[in-house]
Length: 55
Image (tube, rainbow, N blue to C red):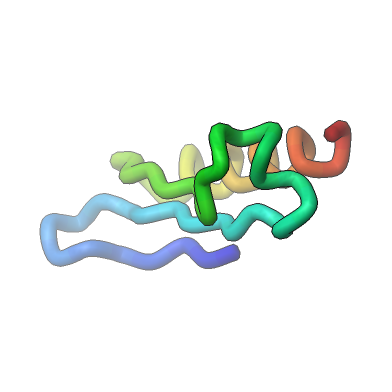
């Protein structure tokens, strides 16, 4: 679970899925998305973590 700033000034959200839940997320190892602001990045990270808890 990290939010890092890119060279272009946007923010990259990365959340790693637990091994047991990867089949529910199309066998992806992690969620990655680039967003324009820190506020939206934090909201998106919280949404992904909530989805993981629900599964």
